Amino acid sequence: MEIVKKGNYLYNIEFKKSDLKSEILLKALFQSRLLGAGTTLTSDFKKINFNAQEVETLTHLLTRYKKERKIEKLNYDETEELIFSLKKQLEYLKRLDYTFFNFTFNDIIVITKNNNKIFINTNTEYLLKIENNLIKFISPFNQREKFLDPEIKELTSLPSTASCKAIYYSLGHLALYSLFEEEDKLEQIKFTKVYWEILRCIKKDY
Image 1: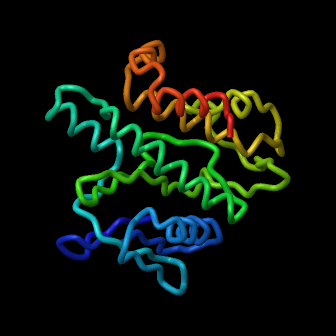
Image 2: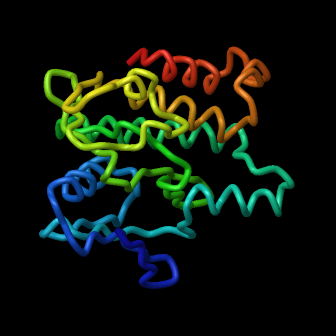
């Protein structure tokens, strides 16, 4: 996967070696309309074009914030945008019978449009097909990932299955640690929209 800046405000996400997973990812992203007006998808499903002020990884953004804000974290509103964006991406992937099983800081792309932020995941290695509300693991993967659902971490053989909702646990913890250093600090935003969203994600209440 490659992100290319084509002009002052024109970018594209391109998979030079397209496969079914990359096609599914781009189709879902296009259908979700997350990237806004003017977004186009090529007929071979290898490239999606969109307008943006800036495109960077979440890791890069947080590193930049450490210099600019003196804290390597998102603010409340940005965390709300992260949850909204990734939930919508998951919704449209599920319509195509696919979902992710994990999120990491390095895989999240942050797109700034009209001073708002859109967060998307472009790692197709974490994309699996949904069958009967389950995802199947047939190849080895890193079970030490920080935000991986315990249900997946505890798998002991291949092939194995897990709930397709496992990704929400990962989303909840990604959002939590994007906003705070420690889990117990969630109480600082108790009863807010982001507080309830994170709790629902961790409990996979979707």
